[in-house]
Length: 530
Image (cartoon, rainbow, N blue to C red; front, top):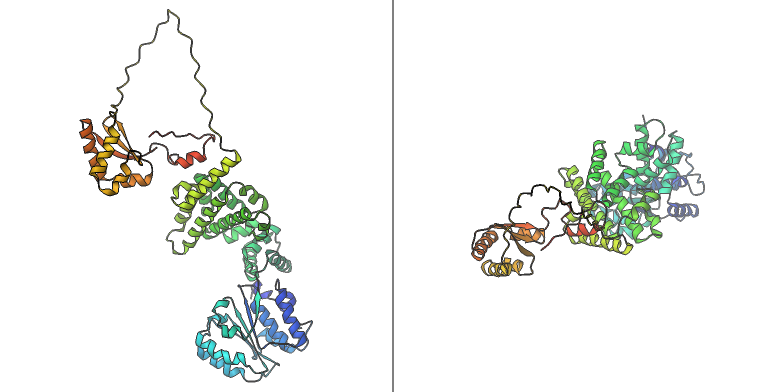
């Protein structure tokens, strides 16, 4: 039967444990000097070696031929513990045996002397899952155990262990493993299993492991079983449903260019290829986080990068964003990823997220406005903000000769729309403030956010923003304005509420957008007259 790689290559001695030198060296010294504690507490994140070190320590406590503080692996005690046949060394899962009755049985059995080895060892994994009554039942025997008894507790959530238990144990903290440590172990396993592992694929697996060696070995096992031949970075992405460094950098480049079409097309192609949406957003979030770290700490931040993109891609993208923009991008991605677990349609959520990232004007919040202003300030400081070239004057034609037969005169242009008489808008604004309820009065001052423009028989109430338009575009305001305007002009008029630049194509009627793109090629500046 096939055995998973993380089980096959579980550390058997302290020398095999990767990246936990401080823990293993202390345990070795205690074993060589005989200063053994009665209770140990191993804490740390998943896959860092807590349970493995607990089993190695249990073997070393009963080994008859220690090798520099490590178990020999050949004596009867080591072989019995490795095979699981030793009844004096028990591994208990507190997640499924967390009641007070199970702990009472354990406590009653623990007082008996071992029958096969010199010390009875209890390894309680995920000890934080015990109930408070179970902790209280375990407390007395941990405080004053028999000489032959040793407890080894392991947990990933130290804050849930009562202080009364913590104070009676020697605590060892297992740190997250560095990507370099994980990569070295993966290369060793790949060599032993005859897996042709590409260096780029090894780096990617080390990063995806997120400090947990067991996760990295499991990912290697999954990818190696999916393909034959060389295991490359592209094959790892295909096996795990990842977008990859180049596609992630291309998505963020589209965000930098405010190119929603290109971002959506790239996302659609990745989605059609079966890429996992959560993984794609996670990669994009990691890249934006790396850029934000580099922006805040250019020198020391290199050691804190997740490595989702290469150095060249990161440096090329870093100059495209301000710190405020990267903070907004990271916040939007984090907000979208957090809502994936409750979403009914993750694809729509991801597409809306890309639209918000590529078109900051769609976000009417303070963070988005701050990011847009910071980009404008950076362009002003760098000198990239240049005015557009004025159109060249038309060339004057020479006068026609005397015998030139002039073409027939064009038809007369239609009459210009009738303009409003002088003082029309102040009078109309004053009447509107007088006749409308109080909530509308502030919008109709002479220099307020609403202006009037008469176009023939059509009176346009021009709002400065979408918010103002939503407030004043109601039957009460429209009907009142039509009645007062008819009284002032002596003729009926139609009234409508519009926003400045409403006839401008979508995306160009934003004044901030016009400022940000001022002077760029293929960009028209919209002049809006009040």
